[in-house]
Image (cartoon, rainbow over all chains, first blue to last red):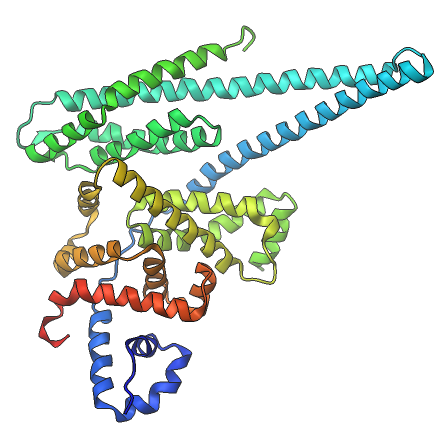
Length: 256
Length: 186
């Protein structure tokens, strides 16, 4: 008698439509019944793998963050389309001008000049908006790096004892975590690779601090301190923050 | 009457952001649950949710309205989860093990979960880490979400027979890890 394979037993356990092909054999075969019983014993006892239910307004928060990113995408798309249109208009104006001058020996069409002039004004406004957005990002990220550095420095300077109270650091790390993820995504979207890479490196450390018990044991505290030192995070934060501040200053306009 | 997913997709394609917002609100939690089970923690699951809807928004034009929006979205969510697992693997290899992080995740455990058997939970988590991305996803979708094999195949982009093999390999790995808890009867 040919017995059911493990794959067929799995099919039977999960009650897939193919199970019907094996029902008759299962009814007669004691060995396969035992095997299926063992498999069921294993799979029935697989822990439920609890999923912590997100808070009641989770959908709303997801949409808020997503809406923010989508608006950014749309603006970039519009800006790109506008730039392409402006470039095309400028090219048309230029070529038309050449043709008109060469063939008709007439002055350049005034309306084309006006269109070209308007396009130029629009392009300048767009570029200024982009600079403002960049500057806002750099300023916010610079402050975020400041606050993160302060937490890490305080943490690494804590005296290692059992039951050290790190509740304040925990709370601040927790607050920085959400903005860290937001800035990382924005930096990625805007092609700020260095900033995004540092934020990515910072995130698990902030998470570790935020999730630590408030009366952390000496061993856990030492582990956190070693982790921060091993990554050279404080130094990296200072270096990238200096870059970010320089970029913020570079994008600053007198009329912004 | 509530608009269907397909109606909302059509409106979203036409530039109606509110329609897309309704889709997001409708599907956020199922995507979060699947992502959590694949990635194993809430921060990653949250990232996956964001990335899934962002990719879905960008790809709305390519969605075939004859297909199921839920399956399509789940496929994107699963791919995002697998991408995240890949990048996490690369990052861990580059920096360090995340063992300490997973132990901090343990602080979220409820009292009930502790009573029910922390050791078994750990063995289960260990079993999941030995599985490949596809094995973990196929097992999670079949065992916890009750998704039929054929649909899992569609989500993973593999044939039904390959899906069966994938789940078989996942169960074999699970059996190896959970064997000590089964006593002498397994």
